[in-house]
Image 1 (cartoon, rainbow, N blue to C red):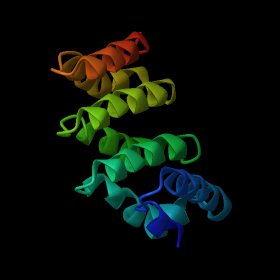
Image 2: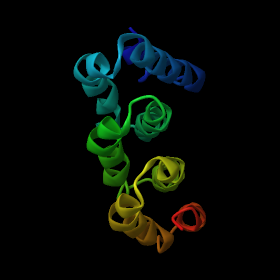
Image 3: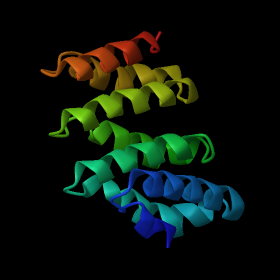
Image 4: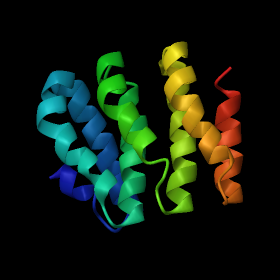
Length: 142
């Protein structure tokens, strides 16, 4: 049920769904969530509706604190990195914000080789807001 809420047209419903996904992950464990929940939840990144793609990014940020490094590196980080070229500036600057949240949880080598190059691309974006948030996130790269 909460997975369907991730595609609700009301923002607060989507935010509640993200919190429910996080709680279910904590309750049933990362292994269960990785096989039963994440595939459905993270499909929102492929939606034609940019609001649902933003929901995917919020879900990545929320889950990152509870899933451990293996799932973070293998599943969540690639989703955020893959959305760098989204057609909607609001999604791209939220990618930068999400990456900034993930940086403290990542190995410095991963930041240098995977995150920083994407943030450099975003820092040269045509949209000023994207540039701003990318440059802000770059400051967290060290």
